Image (cartoon, rainbow, N blue to C red; front, side, top):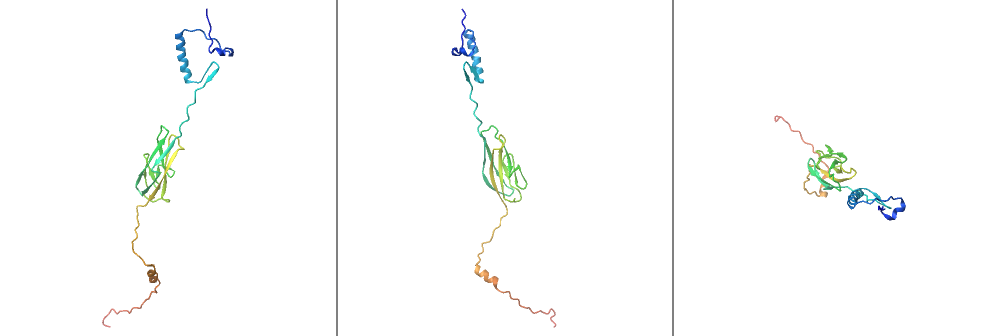
Length: 187
């Protein structure tokens, strides 16, 4: 006597065909293969459809730079560190006031983040150091560097009385005629 089994039994009226009777060993082997297949893709069983959840959205990449500001004298160096979060690619590219790697008039920056100020003072005397993520190029961080001249001017500490100085300046200048001396003593 052969019996045919339908699975699930409550969906018989929906066009499902009966499953043949199988041995327990064969049933377990097929169940393992089916479970593996169903875990990897979306699937339909009987009257219901099961769809796995979509993967979570990627985390937003962010870039930070330290220090965020600094002061450097002409020709000297200042080191920056950039950190990229939420990305396996932690590399950044460096620029100085919009120029990749910088130049002689703005100063230069190495791939390691070491900024070298220019030899001549730029106008304005500040630059923007920008670290841009390789993984997501719109993501960047900025630091501001003030460049100072290495030439200093010191004024003396002389005290001036403004009234005395004004009186000295207003005095008329008097010229006195001088007699000519004779160069020959005999006359």
